[in-house]
Amino acid sequence: MPQFVNTYLMAVVVALSVLIFFCMIRAVKGPRFTDRVMAGNMIGTIVIVILSVLSVAMDAAYLVDVAIVYAMLSFITVVVLCRLVIVRRRVHEREEQEQNERR
Image 1 (tube, rainbow, N blue to C red):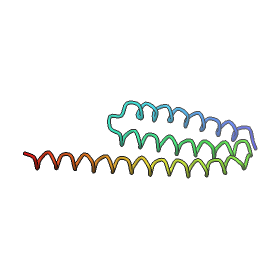
Image 2: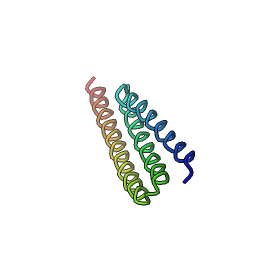
Image 3: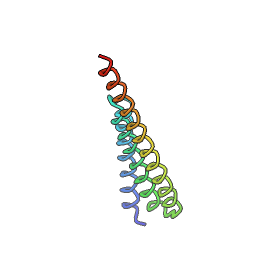
Image 4: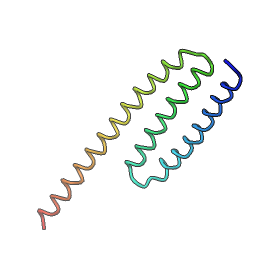
C-alpha cells in the first residue's frame, strides 16, 4: 500500500479518536439518560469504523471479524439499555397515576 494512503488512514483513525473523546464528554455530561445511551452507541459505532480502517491499513482480515462481533455486542447493549428506559418510564407513569388516584 502506498505511503500516502497509510498516512491518510492513520489520520482518519486519529480524527475518529478525537470524536470518541467528544462523545465521552457527552456521555458524562448528559443531561438525560437517553443522551448517555446515544453517546455510548456513537462510541461503539466509531470503534467499529476504527477497527475497519485499521483492518485495511494493516492488511489484517481478522480485525473485520472483531468489528462484526463488537457490532453485535454494541447492538445488544443498546437494546438492553432502551428496554431499561422503557421499563423505568412505565414504572414512573404507574407511580404518577397512583398518586393522582389517591388525590
